[in-house]
Length: 243
Image (cartoon, rainbow, N blue to C red):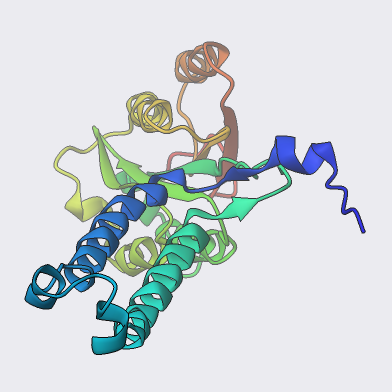
């Protein structure tokens, strides 16, 4: 009975991890060395006539001693071949989709203390920030805060638990300079996005307002130079009310 092997199986045969095949070299050397040890010519071979040796020496004992060696070599070689990953079909390797990246820009200017919310805008913004972090099931997240200058609280990371742990400490009192410079903070956020390979980048600006048309224009120009998306989340009754 003739068994036909499809040509496509032979053409597509390959190893997923061919580097493992190098391990066959020490296995082969070990097998050859042990075989030679079991095949060494004894003193009887030199002293007795070859025609008489089969009657005086039990050669079957040597053959039985080599059987475990052969089995060991076969098991060892088969294990290495299995680790090399032989396959007969070439499948496209899935490429992990790059995650999206979100940089949250949080306003810590003094106007966040305004008591037009119970108790103030800052507490309302913190609650919203926690809700946003709770919804971040995948992707990278960073937190930038600003007042008179901007600072990175956490770089882009998938550990939103750490970011959430820092939310209670957010306060205008921790900022070294008073004021409100959202443009500087957004520039810092864009710099963080430029340093990642995420396929999507977003900046979420959480503020109680942007003071002045000039700042709004500068922010618009910043995003005109890239493909990032800007989202605004106001935390005051009037977006332009700085309190």
